[in-house]
Image 1 (cartoon, rainbow, N blue to C red):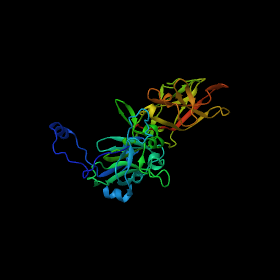
Image 2: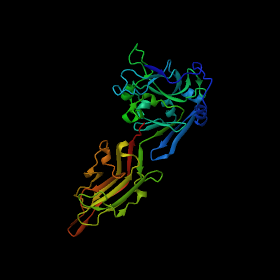
Image 3: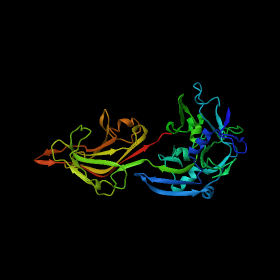
Image 4: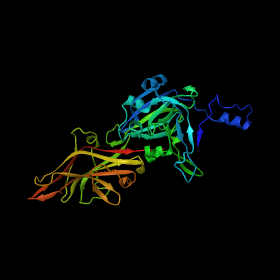
Length: 392
């Protein structure tokens, strides 16, 4: 069943008499006007309040970036409210949005350096309403999704600001096969196939939560905000909180070991060959440095933890293992050797909001031939990059 989002002015019948309650409702309901420009901003990876680049484009400038034409009405599927068919395989509630012209979102984001895999795009309306999308939705969309478009022209109302719902986000999908007239249809199944689960949209009411592709078409788009994966390190320009400790540890240190002495964090903020070194003083201990990153992202929304450690290790016994091992704390397991990025069981690596990394030299402090032979570890730079998402 097809339905229309609204009746255009030249098709709607004017109502001559309105009740006083409706008049009062109109008077107190805030009116959101169409937007006539879009501001795109790319934020620093270590400080989400600091922009790397920001540009604002008015209608003419957007048209110069790209002009994409729907060449027909755009349809998006709303919620079915049907427990037997929540994904709308019966074609229920396909809503006609009419024809639109607009600019590709990717052409706009390119103006501030574009996006990389792992970046997240926040599409924000002038009234503050947000929607989030991944790099692939913007730059390498599934054919069931099609190009993301910010529409500035409507076939009934013309250009913004006369197009009162503009600027508006749409998806221009191709036909599924030659000769099949299903182009410009974003169905619930298209949404399921094209968007990660957290980027899909659900409409929730007293009857339940229902998939709604229509909910991905936000009105009054004014801001496009690019957030890269969040970098945590000891650089003072960042917006993050970290702690660093050093000392001697045993073979199986606890979560908070070592903890007695703090590392000179000015020496580990950048990869610049200026390192902080610790050497053991006690027989049987390993030289170690521990780094605690206070992660602000919810563990359930984190997709990847990537640790970088740049440093050196050594032992005064030239015949001993001169290397060090990097570990990460896993709840219920203890420190485990870090062999690559963490992409699963993320919640077990974020303990009380912290990710804890330990670097330990591989041989203990020994005493041989009346001489102390120390274990040593030195850190030049350490950082954590958190790839994460929001949910629509």
